Length: 336
Image 1 (tube, rainbow, N blue to C red):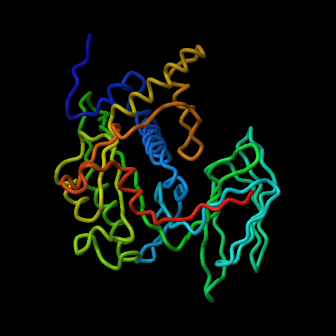
Image 2: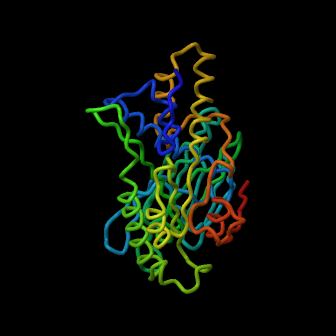
Image 3: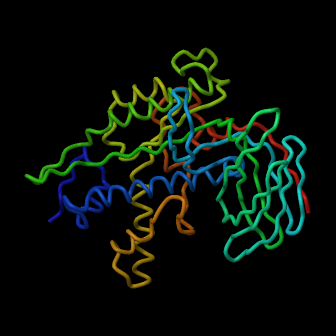
């Protein structure tokens, strides 16, 4: 018998309903949250400028002094470097020497050494990994990121980012259908307003720290040094009230479409069938985490996102376009 689908409930719920119950539903919900983050990561990383500046899950301090762990933060680039193995790159301001010691192309791994006036740091980094270090210049301590972006047989692409100058944050928020243990009824997600408040509070804290004013008070919106983005999942649960709260304090709010997550699940189901493995167990293992996402050919495009707020402004620009607008120009330096 075909189940009647309640339009107030996400199609994602029905897709996995045969594999979940009151006990396992939350676990699957968290896994779907990981898929949503991977989809966002894929789309953001499709643009080279964004990928150069994108740091995953850093802790960012707001005006209140509280630190917030956000899924994606872009930092202003100091230098983008194409560096060959056994070569060094010297920066004068700030004073840093970067030495590419070795590359393991098969493992997408590079050994990088950084020398500053105070210390020498050696790290083995995988592609898209970064590490943060402190450097004293202009008579004060400064936090920098070094990120390994790509690896080739003989060289790699590295970015040096200003850890004190974030330019955009992208938060992924998801709510799900509720199950009630006493009945078979479902309830639409009641967490949406709480999630909207949480996201808005973080945006306010960042605004006061990096823009010195709130979005609602901003007179020149096109020149905001820092912008916040909210990416919502399970769009049927978010009400106009929730979105109005977000619009007041968050620069842009997008929905990650249910179709994208279901399409990704179908993609993984096909792999499981080819391997002759049970789908659900394979699915749960496949999406271990956003920062350790498997390399695959699943394609994410602008059509997998829907802009919810604001509706009139920059209507011709997608998520990548809007995020990219925040990035200042940076020369790419070749040291081969």
